[in-house]
Image (cartoon, rainbow, N blue to C red; front, side, top):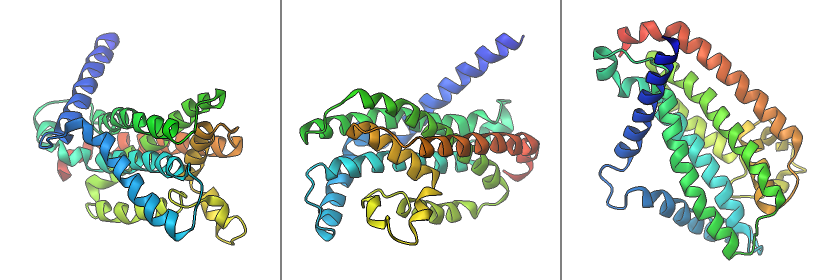
Length: 256
């Protein structure tokens, strides 16, 4: 019976992921192609604006920006989708029994699929600008795993809070802006090396993941302290998120 339930849940999860991808591009003429064009266009704008303002002459600066922008974009979109997932599926929840945890989980996973596809853009841009793969590129695997873990933890926790506190959507938008500015996406982190605010970056687990991923892309050994800290933060957030979700999921029906 447990095996049957597990297989059934896997099927439901896969269908929810497919549904999420279809809905995301339902009214888009470009479809999933937009997931390749959007980060590319954003990279061009950010490179022109911030590259000019900061006087960056490094021709690989677009790769630096794009690698951070893609990871932040996934974290932002997946956690926001997870936050809204229970309310967005309220009509199904009221009619059919499906383990409720599958909704935020699928919201994060379908965004992860799209994110992995968008990495094609990074690969092309990197090669064009002379950033070639090395053995250190294997470090991208644990970095992406930790990114997913971090998104799961935050997303599941937010999905619970979002049911009882609707204003969380607006507060999370503001929080994401703060996270973005403390993730060194469009500026070099070493510019803050001697600033009293540099510690803020090190306390941001997303910044740690982005730096680890950039090390893999640019062929440098990753900072193990960063990846260990981000892993511990993500694991703790996931455990707390699942605990709080399970403790409150029976109350969701009264709020949605």
